[in-house]
Image (cartoon, rainbow, N blue to C red; front, side, top):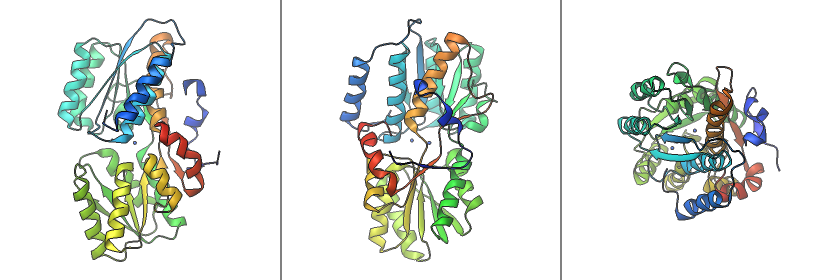
Length: 334
C-alpha cells in the first residue's frame, strides 16, 4: 500500500496496537446493511460483562463521515461484548438532551462530540456526578479534560489546518477560500485558523448553509466568479468536496479543490485529479478507539493519552494514495 505523507509530529495514533484497531446519518442502505452483517458475523473476544455504551454525536442527517465513525464503534463493540447505542443531532441543545437521556438509562459509558462545547457542559457534569465515564471524540480536544472526560480521540484541528497550509504552499497556491459549512462549530474555525497560520498566501473564510448543497454550490460558484485570483478552495468535510468541484466547473475557475476527510467520492476525485489532496483524520479509528478505550477503562482502569488527546490524524493523501484507499472507502472504513 502506498505510503501516506503524515504531518510531522503526529505519531501517537500510529503507535497504537492494531488490536485496538473530523459530520448516524443516512449514508445509504448498503452502509447500514454492511454494519449489521459485520455485527452479526462477529464474535466477542472477551467474557467481560455486557456493558452498554452510548455514542452521541453532532452529526446531521446524510453525513457519510459519521457512518464511518459509527462503523468503527460498532465493530469494536462486537469484539468487546458491548451493547452499543448511537444517536445524533446537529442542534447542540438536542444533542445535550440525548446525552441526558443516556444518563437516565444508566449506561456504563458515554462517547460524545463537543462541536459546540458550551451547550454540552451541563450534561457532561451530570454524567460525571452519576459516575459514568466519558470519552470525547472528533471535536472538543481543548475542552475535553476540563469537562471531566477520560481522554479525547481525534485529530488536533489546528494542527490539521496547519498541515493544509503547508501543503498549499508546496503547491504554489497564493489565495485560498476556507468554506465553513456549520457556523458555531469550533473545530471548523480551528481548521481555518490553522490554514491561516502556515499558509504564505491570503485566505478568506466563506460561510455557507451546509444543510443545502445547492446553496453551498451557489455560494462557492459566486465567490469564484467574482474573484478570479482564488486558486484554492478548502472544504471542511468530504460531502462538500464534490459540491465545490461542481461550483468550480460552473464558474470556469481553475482553482484547486482540496478537502478535509475522506469518502468514496473523495477517493475517486483524487484518482481523476478533480481534487488536489484530502486530509484524513481516520474516522473509523475514532469510533473504534473510543469504544475500546471505554472498555479498557471499565475492565482494567486503563486510560490512554496521559492527559493529552489520542491523535488519529492528520494524514495528507493525494492521487498517489487513491488506488490503495478505494477498497477501504467502498467498504465504509476510510
